[in-house]
Image (cartoon, rainbow, N blue to C red):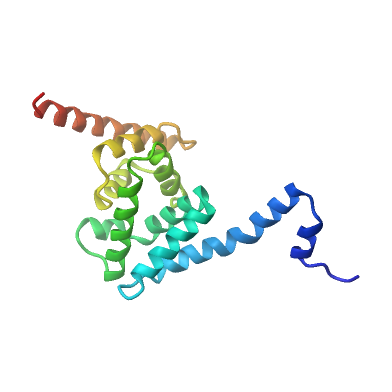
Length: 184
């Protein structure tokens, strides 16, 4: 018969095999598209790109969301952004990261989601400074920062657990100070 295409093979495969073929076939192009939309972000295409990104995340779920946030974290020069530097494109990416995290802050899995995205963007564990810079640049609320700190304690990376504990300790002190300053 000759060469059989993956699509033709998937028609004759069982449900589990079809699911596996579907994952293999969509994951790489999906991630390429997400990265392309983020790297080519401009004032001119901002609305349409964000709309397409949301559509892709809605279609493909959690893994697409993690990759979306990971790519934003990788693309933004956090050191420059902290000092108000960075290009106009970086500012658009920072704005997008801020908006996305603001929408997700109330989610139960916020800390885990952001931690997975941040860890995937780093070769080794995450340092306390990185947690602090990311939260400052992205304007993450204090309660959500606590969630990130708690999630870091469950990391597979010893460095992330140790540094996350320092971050969590600092944020708990900050939370207690804020709570004490507010009248009952």
